[in-house]
Length: 375
Image (cartoon, rainbow, N blue to C red):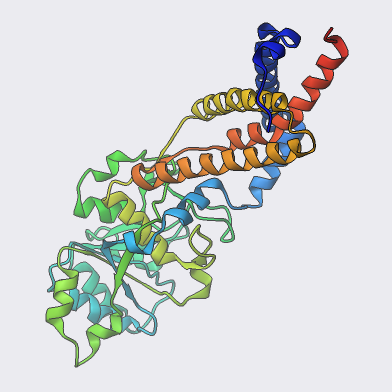
C-alpha cells in the first residue's frame, strides 16, 4: 500500500477543493437520507411497513441486553391459576390474606354467573390489597363489587390487534368522561404511592423487558396438603402476587422477547418497570440526526482518504468493510447505552447516512469530474 504524497496531492487537489468534497458529500448524504425518510412516497412506504409491526431497533436492544447472568429477581411473583375453579381461586385468596404480601393482582375476568361466586366475592371484598382486572366491556363482577371498596384496573395493552408487538404501556386510559387507571398502576399505587408520577400518565412509555426474572408459584400449590407454607411465605414476603392463566392461547401476545407471551406475564413486566422506576429515556430525534451528521462528516473524510490511497480494484471492498465496521460500532454504542443506562438511541438516521454515503460519493465525484479537470 503506497503512502500519500500530500504535496503532490494538494497540487492536483487543493485544500479548498478537498474541504468542498467533504462538506458536499456529507450534506448530500444527510439530504438524501432525510428525503428517504420524510418524502411523501418513501415516507408512506415506511409508514406502511411500520403498520405490519416488523421488529424495531428497541427489540434488538432488548434481546441483546437480556443476559441471563445479569437478570435480577423481580418483586412481582407469578401465581398461575391454570386448572383452578372459582372456588379454588377463592381459597387461594383466603390463604394469601394471612400472608405478608404487598398487593394481589387478579388477572382473571369472570364474564358469567356461577354457583361458586359467593365465596369468591367474599374473598375479594375481605382483602383491600386486591386489584381486579377490568376489560373494556367490563364484567358483571364489577357491578357486583362496585361501591364496596374493591379496586379495578384496565388490562388493555398498547396495541391495535393481538398480533402487534407489545412494547409500551400507559398508566391511565383517557376516556370520554373520565380517566381509568391501568391494572399495573393500581397495584403500584398500593405498594409505592405516587411512583407512577415518574411516568407520563396518559402517554406511552417503553416496557423494560430485559434482565428480569419472576418467581413462579402455581396457585394449586397453595391448596396442596404437602405445601411448605414457611417456604412460600419467605418467597412472597413483601412481594406483589399476580394471579392469571399462563396456558390460555387466546391471552398471548407478541413481545420483543417471545412471540406468544401470556398476558399476565406482560402485566408483570409492566408492573416491574414501574416499581423499579425503569423509565427508558428515548433521545430526541434531533440528537439522532446530529449523530448522523457527525457520522456523515467523519465517513466523508474517510472516503476521500480511501480515494487518495488508490486502492484500485479493492476500493469497493474497503468502502463496504468500513461501512459495516462503523454500523457495528453504532449498534454497540446503542446496546451499551440501553444496557447500562436505559437510554434508547435511535440510530436509524445513522444507518441511512452510512448506507447512502458511498452512492453520494460516486455522484459527487462524477459531478466534479465534469466541471473540474486537473492540469
